[in-house]
Figure 1: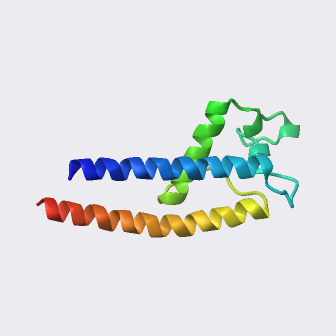
Figure 2: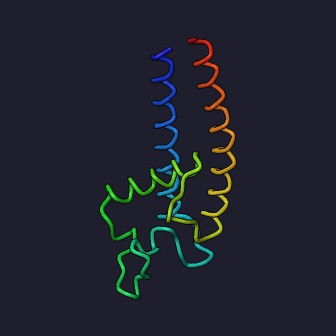
Length: 119
């Protein structure tokens, strides 16, 4: 049971890593119908023309950790200050939220079943 739970946690981490990489890739390369991407938004709430740093200006570690945080926020009822700012990002967000809702519900169900079986 403990090994199965560890495998489930590793699967969750891997899936969120893949989603984070897709989110970053969309921010970097997707078509921008608004001329913006989440990478071009200000980290500290200030726009670039107001002297604020953007996510694009940040280190690779900060960009990855922000993408991973965003991914986890789509899978759980968490919050995140990074938002979709163009249509491609918005559609991807809706897909992730839908899959996250199904995945989170399935995860809670599977963990509950494992705990009841372990009793």
